[in-house]
Length: 188
Image 1 (cartoon, one colour):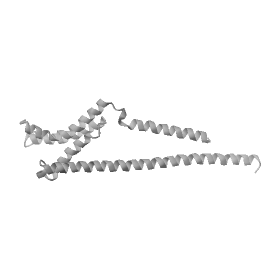
Image 2: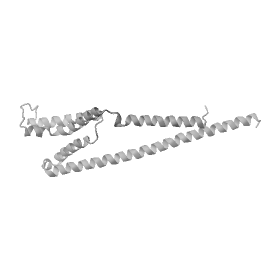
Image 3: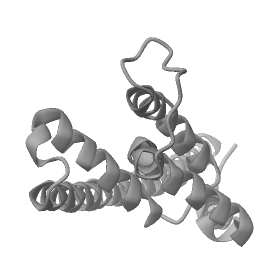
């Protein structure tokens, strides 16, 4: 099958349209507002639940059901540590607003501060450290997104070049074959 320039142009248009459709499917604009709010609530819950033990202590809610832990507060803390990531995974499925992740990152940052230095877990310095971890996280996400974007652009340019080169090669091949056939007809 020989491709001429008209065929090449229609293939290029088709590829551009396919790329537009793919990009539209990947955008968050098509997700309904209510669904995104549900996802956002799940993400925020994943961070806030980490501090349910402190809320229950403030409200003086205790129980004898400790499930092997030394106190009910320790049980709630361990249980929420296990359940919070599940809420985050559920929330991601609903395409939440990205700012909601800062609540979870901040809460997990406070948890990290407590793990490595429990003396700063409930004072001002602990909150500053957690805020710093949030800033590092934001910077890291920005760097990764920038790198991915650059790689995607370069990949797109390389694919376009390959497609254009294949088109040119097909045209050259058809011209060479036409010249050979004409040459055989003339007796060369």
